[in-house]
Length: 502
Image (cartoon, rainbow, N blue to C red; front, side, top):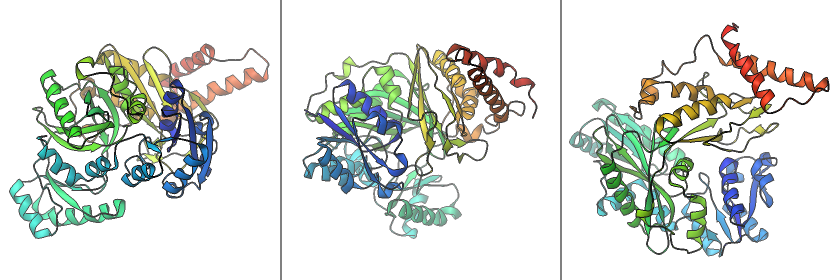
């Protein structure tokens, strides 16, 4: 039985893992870089250890230091979260060698599914539909040109290692083939240390739909239904929801069975995600597998009613899954948006700095997974995501209305955030109707621009004025303005935003 878990991560995912551990009566150990000394995950854990300077290559990616802390702290297991070392086969192997339980899949599964070309071969062997393309790395340009002519344009050039849109090129014209392959190989080499690329037929009007899977060490695998992840910017997800608004029941069951088959093909245990590309006719093709917990896992938890982190730990303990496929159902609708410390009206430039004030959204059907607090300084060294806002409704219409309400209540000052941009997304007709694909942001750029009469400056004035009023009343020794009174101030100044002209 796991009694103490070291969480080899930071930010909101570290806090989220620790919360489930606390419910299970499991002690937690945090690791942190010098810049994260005051971070929330350090405060929340039962124990915490410094592992190096701010750059992740000198701290959160140092396998030797993390293993050293695990031994020193008496942790018998390590949870990698997502990102950093979560899909590092060498880390999984090192944990096993040191007698430490890795709360995740085997090194074999990570390695097999982490290489896109190898994964494609395994899926073809397992009978899982894959996008037409190559099953070997492209060795020379002449062969590549011949293959592309056979497949037919347009095609995607993709890096075999890694992900996140790096080493990826869309080719629509024959004269662009050579440049696209060279560019993809160069970027893949720089990002992943591996310049292997392969070719896939490009699916027009693509939808990005993924299936959550869970597998135990006894050969049992189930899926926990789909997540729609097609609202993306530069191949990075912005909004996720479940169920998918385009899905039919028969296709859902078919894709779920394919996801289970994909996981079984590599003897997968733990939580993982099978990602598919889907066209408008609901033809689906295997895209890749993420051998870890996904950022968007909370919407699945909310709709299916399963704590995925607890299940990860139980699987690592060697327990069988407590349910079979027939026990699992979808209930209602959930949506997640990612809150970034960036300025969407200035080309999404990162916005590090000190948070002066934060009001987290509350109320029925709202979940907030974050790690920031008033006075905390968002560092420049890591991903700018500072929180995830998850809402649930009895149907999609209610979920969207609830998300709008929650975003309205979410106030952060001191830094720029993506909140205004997310509000605009929810007002786009294509999103409201559920008629969107991965080109959503590109096709709706005009609708996603800020309104001239209501800019962030208007909101800043309202925030500053309300806060000054709050401080003034404190100085005058009046009753503290908290909760409802402060919210009313926000509401009053919000009504006046329309008349502000700066």
